[in-house]
Image (cartoon, rainbow, N blue to C red; front, side):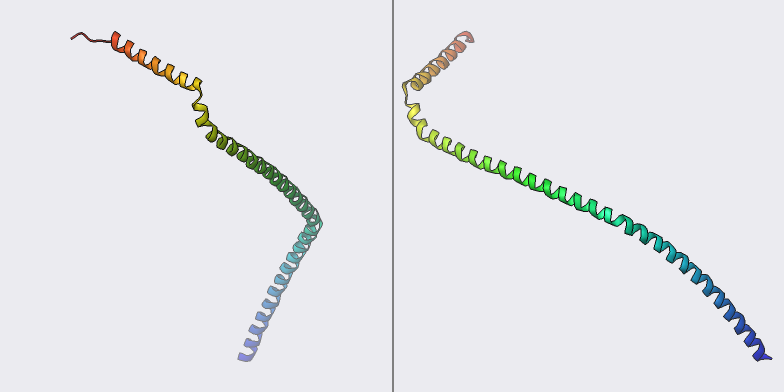
Length: 131
């Protein structure tokens, strides 16, 4: 009697396991169909995506090369102008003492000193406080 009851219970458990496995297999089949559809969609759109990425990469490379050329041109121009400016400043350093000895600069310096003296004299003369 116990053997029959245990066999019935084992049979019911086996039937329940088979039914649950059937549901699990149905879920796996549905999931595999969804994965297949997704894979087909991806395979159809992937070549165009890769082509767009390749075009974008090519454009970025071209833009970077153009920017690098411009920067190199600006750098060369800056180097040349720096050389020219340094040559001019060196020449000014050599000729400035000689040029300052010219009579016109001495005259300008004397006139400036006279004007300052007159201005101080007038300020003192007009603002003189009476003691």
